[in-house]
Length: 292
Ligand code: C2E
Ligand code: MG
Ligand code: MG
Ligand code: MG
Image (cartoon, rainbow, N blue to C red; front, side, top):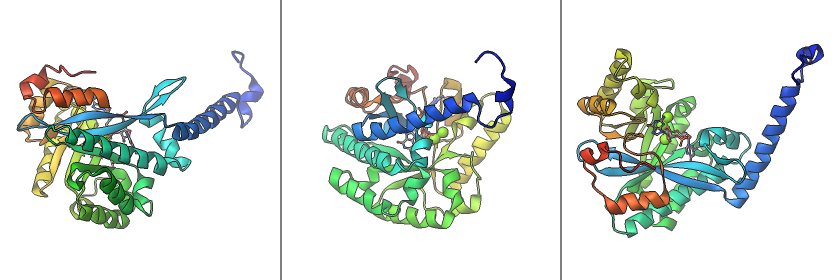
């Protein structure tokens, strides 16, 4: 392997490719197995209201608890799941689990929060998606207004007409719709105007350098201004520092999410957070005492 093999260099199928293929095949097999064995877990990241300092939402983020490799983040298996047709099953599990969990938190008597679930392209386009959401809501007993569906901008732009139709049907159920990773896709503003959405999430890419890069600050200001003109709420993702927070407060951003407030938490830690402090003051949040 350490010696350079000139034949290998020119052959189409290099040894590394063999290795990649094997890894992929085994990841595929293991992912199918994971779906059967239910090796997934949801973590929840608080979303904080800028005015009150209250936690008003929780974003559900999937993790794969691999028996041998440990925790595998979604970026490493969601695209594969989409490719090999497992995303509907995984997505359905996420939706059910998140709605049941939120309902059970509500039953415990804390102030009610929304739960945000990420939908992938294939999932949104699956034929029975509106029926599925409706069934999950009625089976879990969660009121529709406590479910937010996050859809990434780039995916919704590939087929805007169908996207609008499905969004409208979902809105009719009473769920909220949020455009995730806003600013990183095609950013077609005329589509944005036509989408029946409630909220946009400013991508972490803009928040990251907001205090040092005037362009990122300008973009963020503009996104917030446009959103407010269209009567949409704005949530900023990936807030890690107090100076980012201060700037976003100044810009009248409505909601915040990021490591600064809390990392994504296990359901258990999240329960504890809700029990201990259902209406955290921004000052307390600044101490970041709920880090996992
Ligand atoms: P996303 O929906 O944009 O989620 C935000 C991601 O940023 C999460 O990564 C979260 O842990 C991370 N994050 C939050 N705050 C901070 C911060 O302050 N700094 C930094 N550096 N990162 C922060 P995660 O959990 O690895 O998820 C990555 C992506 O995977 C998500 O991006 C979402 O697109 C996708 N995803 C997660 N769960 C699901 C799911 O259940 N279904 C589908 N289809 N996609 C999912
Ligand atoms: Mg999201
Ligand atoms: Mg996002
Ligand atoms: Mg993102």
